[in-house]
Image: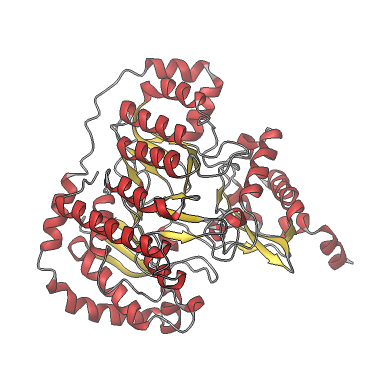
Length: 556
């Protein structure tokens, strides 16, 4: 993983010192809240429903044990003993005191981390496949390119006041685990007919008020052209993007209103001007970055202990079957640690849990951890022979839930429990769904099913691309939950279709039960997933089950 240079260290320390002075001026009244707001947002500090919230960047989701331990220390020292991992591979602290935030930022700088550009109308944390550098299906590790983009975009003088926030995701595998098609810029590493490796570039994806799937603007972009082409895209967006209406300010609207062909023509013109200005410096930097992302040495290990445990322990076997993925190296595994214990808040980890995950990474995973956009934590380089010992440790810390990709592995935004923008609760709904299906002992029989919940139209819970999406809204002061079906956040990305009228807070869990029961009745075999069944039978049977009175009236 990338390590800070002396320049990086000096840059971040200078920003912390600058913000410390700004905080002091806010506390003594020299700055009003209106004057302070743009300054705090440049440093990842929000004013939420009950308190300030600090959002910390975890670049492309990669951490080492020292950094995870420091996140635990920050949670204990200046917050309430836990942190919340988000869909942008960040961590949020929901209860810091304003006077303590500069100390938190200094503590982050001690381990090569910061909160710069985790907010504001600028290029946010660049995200990547959480299995990057280890996945069996990977063409190339995308993280060096994500790091290059991070360095290019950080404090870029032209892009600090874009029309709206801007998000980039990169994947190096044909199986998309980074939701690249729902980003302002999505980058897929591909090979052309000549066997050369480059990028398929997508533009104009995004969720929120007007969800759209990204459109291909370049089928194949040589890797050497990555930075000038991305700069061309953001430059054209900065020029054309709407500033008169924040709801129409995202690049997806810019592409839609101007048309992809016109937008692409302007990007290509800008790219032709920019391309020669980079002079190879970006490629020299990329080569230095790549050297820091070499895969660790993973020696062959005896698998007999793993095989014995797998064959004889059904609890361990269920955990392996759901939480372990294939590694590029034989005898090794990608282990996803669920932060979705039944009834708990999705994405939350206590300081004690963070320390345990850090210890496991140091001992068993080449000192690497990853944060997924699905709000879980990954140990990317685990010998299968070590899985029984790791499982036993995780059980002691409430981290051994075997539910990755299942109905209780829910993505949920903080909702009205924390967020000032939210119009409904998300966390209790997620907790109740997980608890209900755990009580019914149905989770593993149901199979792969992705539920995603947002507490407002901004869609931080990615509900549009959930197999079942739930959107909480305010209807005359009452929480109302709309349901969408058929969304998909993979390489086959799709926006879900709304089922019909929404449901009250006390009706939403029974509604999800109804959908699941309908799926179980309709599926042709236990191997047919919820999404496959929906694609085969369509909306009609689900809608009929959800709204029986409406269907009866229509039939009459």
